[in-house]
Image 1 (cartoon, one colour):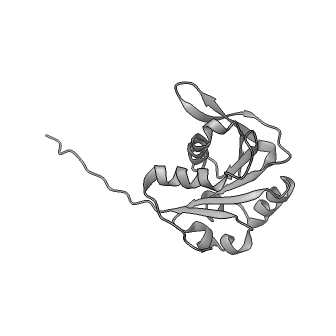
Image 2 (image 1 turned 90 degrees about the horizontal axis):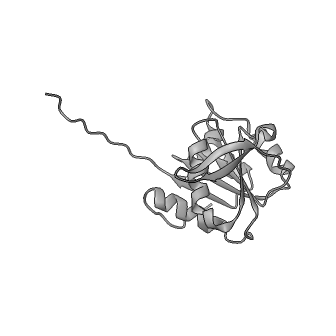
Image 3 (image 1 turned 135 degrees about the vertical axis):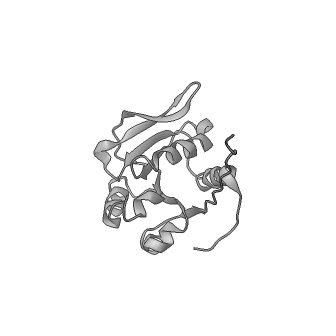
Length: 161
């Protein structure tokens, strides 16, 4: 895969995501799969990028379809992972980078199986710090796009009296 463009911050991440899925019709099903806890808020954040498109949004923790949950809009809160969901097919499967991490993830075969069970939908990877390249998943999975971000953190402390 070639790097086409770079953007900064959260808005860069969400705008890239929105651009990855314009070829699906409104009211399509988008499934996110990620590791428990760490990836969940990213699925909720990315859902916000497509909030006006009427898609059915589903979160599948650790590529386990029996644990599928709806991603639902809650007034005064935003998108949250909630009620159990039944899913058998999707137009898009978004693999979040935590699944490719040795400590938090799953074997790549679990992702291949999930992709197959959902009818081989368009596959998008969203990760940080080149995790899909480092894990070898970028070359093995049939990604249509990979969105990669890097995080730089800083901190300041107010001096205590």
